[in-house]
Image (cartoon, rainbow over all chains, first blue to last red; front, side, top):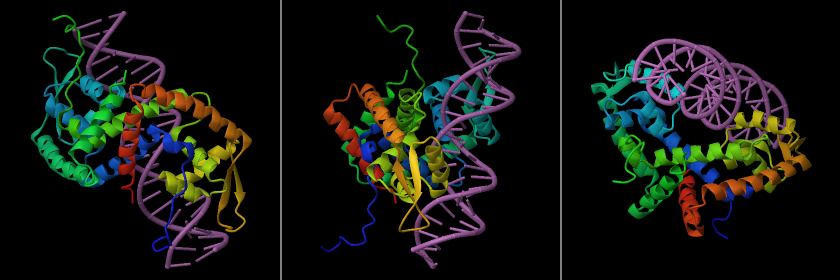
Length: 152
Length: 152
DNA sequence: TATTGTTATACTCTATAACTATA
DNA sequence: TATAGTTATAGAGTATAACAATA
């Protein structure tokens, strides 16, 4: 049979093959790796970009709210925000109303980085999803959102 | 309007909302957390269970092949396999044909642990996917498999 | 020359617990 | 009493580079 030689078939996965959790993990990791390649040189990572995105949509928001929106624990937000402030992408100012909190805003540089990444990431998603038409993509996102909605 | 008070609405995500990669990450994390709860007390983790599953379906397979099937780097397989051997779940014996390799097989205890976890994990997936009918579930897995197929 | 397994190492993400200062 | 932010710390997954033994 032509074409049947030298095919490096992969080992069967066993019961794992039928678990949604496994496929989510693999697909997520694949997207994560490609994300890193896509934004190489910008200093961005998935978590950091997520934070910038939420702040850009909610100027003046505080850490806790950002973390809640993204599923990041308070304790872990601290160094992430500090990192973004140190990079000059985020501005952290004492909140006028609540002296415990900080109001976060994007800096000009932060807005530039987001814009640059958005361009690259749009291409990155388009590349990975090149075999997906509009319906497929919408169906996938809809299914994933239903899963996310389970979060306590 | 009744019911509109005290709704702790979450902050908007901004551009992030439309990225498949983000939703994959959140959904995968959710499944991972619930996986851990489901198998609590068995000593299993997602990666370890994956390895056991592949070995169970390919008795005598070596580390490299398992890693390739699961997307785990050779270097990281070493301690994982050692861990499973030390737990008495995996047997590692010199391969008869290739003296560089080890042949991996499940121990009786390993088979027991897999069986126990399979039962719990089936319930765990059923719980998370309780709002998914057979068609939804199949559609989701099919979409995720198409993404995984992109892997080099 | 390629491959199996190995060691060493580093980075990132996430988790928990305990603390402070404000509300 | 609850919340915003913090510190310290640990666990886990993944990444790269370099090496020995064998194919």
